[in-house]
Length: 155
Image 1 (tube, rainbow, N blue to C red):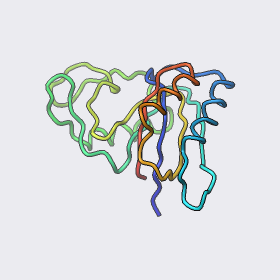
Image 2: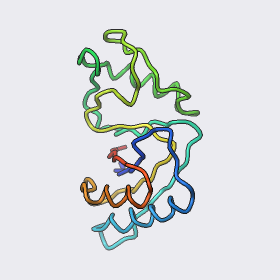
Image 3: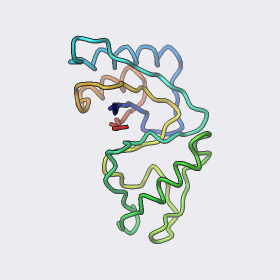
Image 4: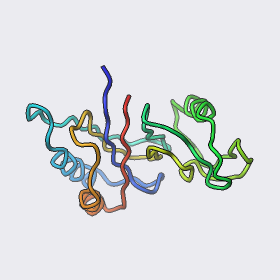
């Protein structure tokens, strides 16, 4: 059986909240994840990482584009990169893209479904809703004390 995961991460891949803000925000995210089948409680994971870690969209990834030349980037290159950093995260997000050789940042690539990098993540497992609204994200950002974005994975 596959799972869907709706994650909220800070827009700055290096930023982490304090524990109190993280707990308040996880409680808010749980409240926002309404509509689960059978009125089940939402399964929420709150995770801190030592280094920026990819929060990807799993099987939802359709394409990756280069921010410099706009050419598509081979998903095999992406998969190899993820595999080589699966255990320890990314000490740097600097990368040379294979299409045109330009120096850029992994978080600047054009992912079709959203992906991101973070040292902090709140993940909701198997929510009924597809995405949080802009108003929901603003409330989450206000509680967390930092701007956020969302990633939805199918794994």
